[in-house]
Length: 70
Image (cartoon, rainbow, N blue to C red; front, side, top):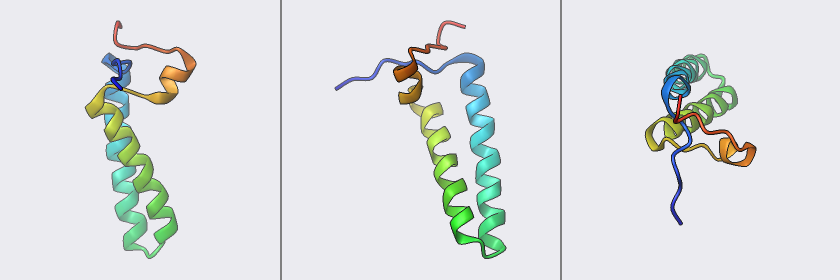
């Protein structure tokens, strides 16, 4: 099953920035012993990073949003 790209342009850049921010929050939470908070932030970071790498977001697909033609 193939996926059509639906994340591009400014949306992709914003997701990359958010992935970095959540990765930093993950490290801060884990260093301060807040493992649940770190796990949640890490999951969000990985999700945004996957969106950036694959140029696909399932939520965008469900909502009918395509930002590749910005």
